Amino acid sequence: MEELGLLSSMAIVLGIALVGGMAVRLIRLPVILGYLLSGIVIGPYALQLVQDPEEVETMAIIGVALLMFTLGLEFSLRTLRRIGRIAIIGGTAQITATVALGVLVGYLLGWTMRDALLFGLFISLSSTIIVIKTLLDRGELGSPHGRVMIGILLVQDLSVVPMMVILPSLEQSGSALVGALGWAVLKAGLFLGGIFVLGFWVFPTLMRRVAEVRTRELFLLAVVCLCFGAAYGAYEFGLSIALGAFVAGLVVSESDYAHQALADIRPLRDIFAVLFFASLGMLIDPGFITENPAEVAAVVMTIVLGKFIITSLVPRIFGYSDKTALFVGSGLFQIGEFSFVLAALALELDLMSNYLYSLTITAAVITMLMTPFAMNLASVLYYRILQSDRGSRLLANRLDPDTLDEGKSLVNHVVICGYGRVSRNLGRVLERRKFSYLVIDMDPRVIDEAREKGIPCIYGDASNREILGQAELGKAKVLVVTFPDPIATRLTAENARSINPRLDVVARIHRDEDREKLKDIGVAELVRPELEAGLEIIRHTLHRFGLTTQEILYIVNTLREEGV
Image 1 (cartoon, rainbow, N blue to C red):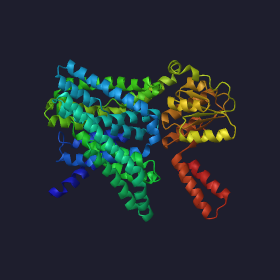
Image 2: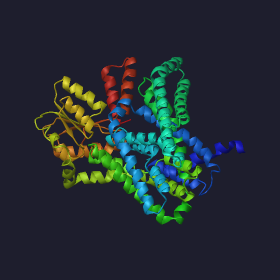
Image 3: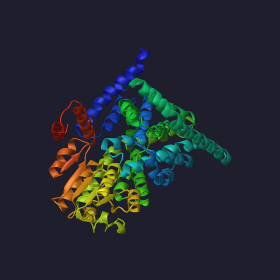
């Protein structure tokens, strides 16, 4: 029955994606790979199980909007302001340099200047969705490299607007192009201004009315309407759907309803995100690769190496550490999903050949498939370098010399590794009690803020043994590790305990598999935010039933030891 075509397509896609996701997880690979490979298998160039891929692509757009909306909810305007400089200046520089790389590749391959320019525009964009999903799976969305990557990606998404204006205007005169760009910028400004006005003055009142009804379905419906409304509004103004949804989420993140909105919309996001990744896999034609193996390999390797160098240089220029540069480079080398939109528009306008279109799409999907592997490889390489004395000293020598003597006068102090929101609260308490502490962080902006407040601090990667050696751990009382990166947490604890075996270490964890590893190292206390929130709820609930403080404390401590 034709009316059930969409339902059957969704059932096939989700079912095969489930199998593919479980298969890759069994061999400890990111589930994104399973979704992409599932799309290749069931797509029009392989088994052809899905008769109309465009239906799935339409549903995948919903996944893009929901994923970007939740990213906005988890982000904040304060974080956006902190990374604004590197995002705007660094992101613009990255796009310009990558376009130049594409033009150079086209010239070397004998393409026309127009084809070379189009190719440069396509490869200048990275995949916001792939990167965000990878960071979420790795627990690194709030890390310095995670924030830098997201900032650059947002600038790339904004750049889609002038790019879409440029494509139809390639044959126009200079004045026509300038006029079209000016009109596009004006529309973008009007849309963003309208979203912020509605978000700060209209939306809070609306959500309060909905929340007062105390119906979860209506609250979820209101959140979804805001997400899709902003996404559609962005589309009508000539902006990307992803950008509209992100801005809407960013505005909601400043309200009292952000946490509930995020909790309610996450299940929808995860389901539709699967459709998006599978739809990307459907675009790749294995036959094109077998017919043009040399060209595909050459283009892919040039993109990977060229974009890695360009994107890793950006954070280094802005004073970020080698680790941040390495992870940013390994995470942003792929071609983005909005390159598909630009390529389709260029093909529709007869600005490029089918060969260049197929080459671009193939290279995009291959580089997306490589991204999770590259991020994992970057982790392995970096921490292996750190585990060697020579590599540790080499990376430490790149630090600002003024930061290397901060810990010399401290005794019985607390060393805080990672100065985020949780660590700042700890710092305030220690100051009130007149306890000394030292901060280690690899975000130069955080270090600048701490130094302005007179807080002893060291700029660098706390998992580096040489950096820890500057913190006088032999005289320290406690080491507190608040990293979102589980590998960095483990290596920091190992190096700290090797310097001072008697040192008490308190570490934050997010995954069950990290618990035993850190216990084996000798970490005294492991704090899991989700677990502690549940224990606090249990404590309040049992108190209402009249249990004594000692009874509640025994139950809570037992549950904490069990790690449930």
